[in-house]
Image 1 (cartoon, rainbow, N blue to C red):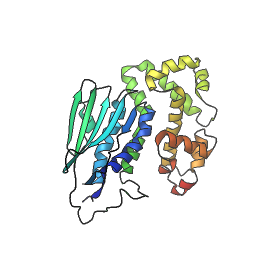
Image 2 (tube, rainbow, N blue to C red):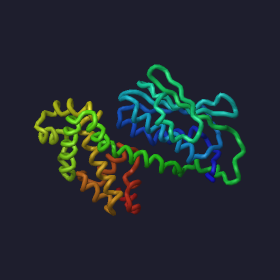
Image 3 (tube, helix red, strand yellow):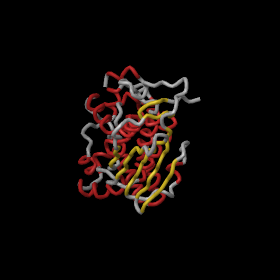
Image 4 (cartoon, helix red, strand yellow):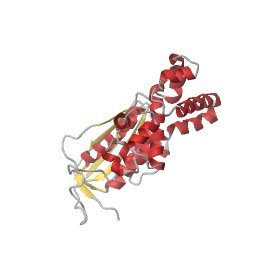
Length: 286
């Protein structure tokens, strides 16, 4: 039986949203959260709630168009119930059942012309069960139990380049071949710290402007950002399949120093590379 916690629901949701913000930023989507004016104390199963909210936010980031918004709010209409509301703009996804297919808690879905609203209802002010830990959520050294779920979502984010080629192969073989060539050049120059958008454009016999115009509609980001994503994808693979140290992985993916690699990795995804590193002792060396 999964244990429950009695804690500030706003604190819990805030940290969940913060964990997904780097992923949304990478997709040029504004993910925000309105902090409640006062604490909303609730009894809930943290792992279950995170397992419901995480895939919804992850899939909304995937399906919401660039430069649109995903906003999370809490609404407590009375002393018995609270609603967690997640709303996206730019597209109506109400008919996309995939977004809520893994939810265990009841979720209401409504929509307007170009937006969708997902509402989760949580009970408030109940007596906690005997095994409740009342400090874990608000403690100063709190490490979320649901972080494993976020880690899984980050892993799926890393594989997008491969998924993109596969999707293009069915609908646009010409663009799939173009992206495959781009990916191959990046991979073959993985250890070259000087390999950037200029280097890539020269290797493709294109000007940087031509490369940008050709790639942007496919990858939805700049060539430089895409090169960095491929390098980080390779870094993640090395962490999970070898016992390489962070410094070794940094060298293998074309970063001149481990500190720079750690800074880029953390800035892009909001987590340190030590989260993926099999050598946990390296967590303090990055």
